[in-house]
Length: 612
Ligand code: M6R
Image (spheres, rainbow, N blue to C red):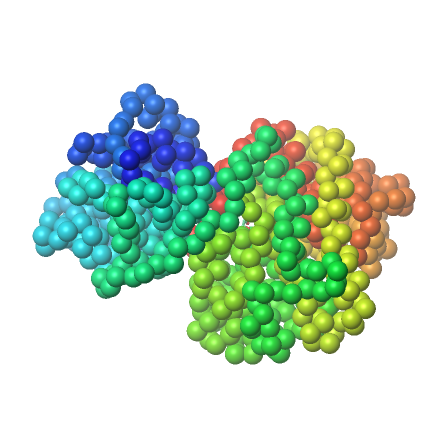
């Protein structure tokens, strides 16, 4: 949830670190800080607020130094303030630490350190860790690297760490367990970062550290080892996106850019997998395990948030086309429920970041129980991608806006490809129907493009609801998960209370909320539920609710009843989620902007939730 950047090399460290923190700010943005060692002296600047506030601070007191670490925070222990902001310096000033994760046994460690005379300035678990490292360093006469490893052997919890020791100022240390950390390998310079985005503009060579690995960086090279002190030979991977992908590209916000990228990102998700000539699908990432997937007794999709909504679409797809039992579970519930899992089950973890703590824990548990575990992730080299038996990358490109948009359509695209392929392999889909579906899927990027052309009309509709206090989203079948996703998008970035329901559920309670102030967004495209959803619209109108209907182009019936209609192109019912979600994303965006909200960094949220 927090972002870490580190640099060692020949250039001035602070501009590189601050720029890196700006790239990582989507991970957490309640405080920021930087520590640099300049001529043997440690300089620390940190403050509550955004990286821009830190930049003002640093600019007013320029600092030198070619080694440093920085942090952008999403508070776990202690409120966001200047003192709790990272980096944290150990009591005697030997070590300085930035940390992403939670040290679960920090209270016990703190008590033991207090008995030895250690005092603490902050309420954070990180300061406890800094002091533990220092205590071991002094008491046992260890090197900095040895002291870090000795301390990490004592902690329980998750960490991505950047550490410097003032006495060994030619070395920069990193360590990970549970929270991601990568090393950028440049020419005579090295970078540490929570993900590839701050590294990409400096080098395309990257090492993704594994759990319980420690890296020691000098200007001459890197040395990776584990907590048992064994030397390891890490794999160097290549960053697979261009720096342009992590800029706003002329858009006012990342979210708007990412919404507009969807015709391309969905095409990218299909690239090399859906063959337009043969009208077939081939999924290299799961080719080896396909026979086991085909024979699966049950598929369990685990995810959180938007990815969970994508999973719900997957449930409809797998059941309809592959005729296999599917359950979709919130990872946070699934992991603790001691669910009944057998080796005939296949677990599919869906996650944009690939770092979501609950999803990661859920797949580890399922693996132990012998299930085949697959991943659908966007971030290459992420923990979930590496901890699964096989998987499919969504290839949507970096998603920086905290509100997930293009990741959702990419995830649904992967699930759609899987369902069609599995349907064919299980004999549940005829060759003819399979080919028709593949053809329709190939048309989706174009359909999304056509929805985006209607942006001005969608903005006009949004204007009418910028002052709303509540909203209801209704859908049926494939469009029910889209209703949930629409409501989540609105609430997370505009802070309007919004709920999604299966339209038929309205009568069982939510209808009591409907009056002339209640906007009701109804997903009412042409599908098998059309007549039923028309009835639901009438029920809302009879209670004077405001209806904003997402309809199939040319629909004349609903436009007579609804207050506003937004048209989407006619498409196969199973592909509707990919198209119908787009106007809802735009409405949330427009309303949030009109309300003056920080669209890309909504309050209290962080992009990747690496704590449970
Ligand atoms: O990285 P993940 O897909 O695992 O993240 C799961 C949720 O935290 C995420 O989808 C969240 O709900 C989005 N910010 C919503 O827009």
